[in-house]
Length: 122
Image (cartoon, rainbow, N blue to C red; front, top):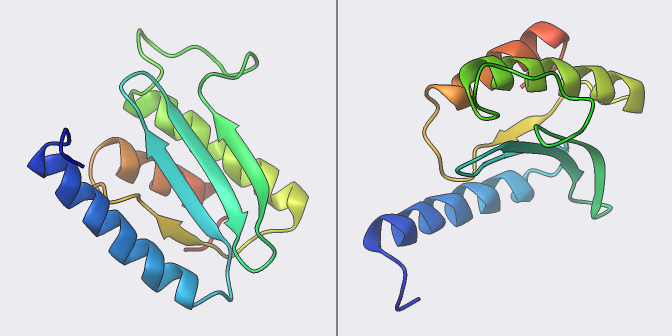
């Protein structure tokens, strides 16, 4: 924890605080979105069973190419559609969104809107 910057420490605290509240209400699976410098990754996790029900990432070979980045808003929109389709196949309709301490803005908001259009209920 010594090498982490204050910004990263605060993000981790926000993430832990939100994740604790989501896990406490375990009636729905968690929709976890992770954003790195190069790509986006999404998982739908059932905390009761401890299993990943659905996963998708922009690194997959069948993911359509978007502009010059795999973490742009258009890539997030496509990822939201893919996740909602896979969730329907797995029988998941209602989820709780775990933003991993990130603000609901930009890429995260674009992903969430497209997942809602695809049929997921937050």
